[in-house]
Length: 232
Length: 232
Image (spheres, rainbow over the protein chains, first blue to last red):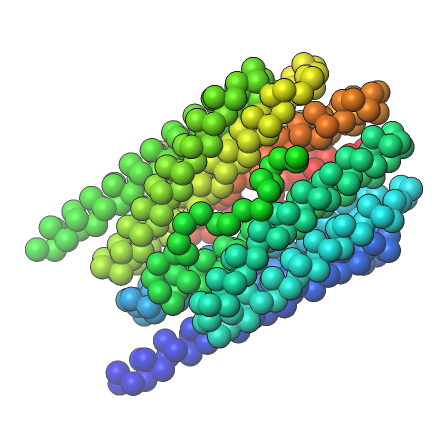
């Protein structure tokens, strides 16, 4: 009887993990598609991303309901409790990452008709490459419950902040060169903020992994690059 | 013995509520001070806000630890379980609101030396007035467990999105009028985003109140004004 109960709890945790994996995969694809839509002015792809966000939100609610029911029924303690609390947090961060992708897609649909400045989009691509790598790494770290790998993601977020600063400076330069660039570059500025926030949520997931495994958070303030709220 | 146990759980919930109240008050003050610092170019006040965020983050971790311990020890069910899960969520949203205030303060410190465009700051003040009212209302709604009041906050978020759109249009106009306005206005654009996000987190708190009281979320998509990711 006890064995059966333990296996049931493990089975519920495994199901929650599968849902987290599923959410992670959807969020990764949304981000890639949103950036693709932005770079190629593909309105249809942008709309597909916006529609997918509904699915992601529904999955997050499913995970949260299941986790809360597990808390109620299984009444876990210690590391099992942290596992379930961790799932609630991670699903919330993945849902927010999906929102950032959706916002990028909305802007892509909006500015598809505007005159583009290809060099302005290049900086954003670098940000996306790093953000996508970080997200992939942190999802792997979660699957492996690997704290060292989570710490590496946490530390690397500083690079994304630094990239954001240089994108900010470049976009400001384009705007000052020619007022006709202003609208387009302003939208790209917001996209760079969306990508920086994907990085923040990815770092939150890294912290949650450390919390699940060790019961403690990662030490100290998150490392920051050049202050991301400022430009030199 | 049973009575004693029930009172202990109630006492823990009351303590959690007091902490939430405290967090709410700190977040409200940080927001007001950050906007004040921005409007009056008060670097010292901006730095005070930035320092206060550390205290807010610590309080959020305290609440979360206490809530998780309550889940483990009291093993609550039904509405009591939702109370505790709700506290975890609300403390996370209040911590994010504090982050938004801190980001506004950082920009205020950054642009204090720049030439100002008073009319550009006026739109932001309107956004802040509404965001501050919403936050205050939702904290009251939580203290009263008042779902109708929470719903009103949730519905009113659309006004904030509409305000953000008009601020966006105005700032774009100022930037196109004169390239020397671009840097200052770009920072204000980000501040308007910070305020819009305060509204989002306030709306999340409204949804959590509905979840605590009814076990269900607020119906349908959050009402949106003119799409906040776009400008006409």
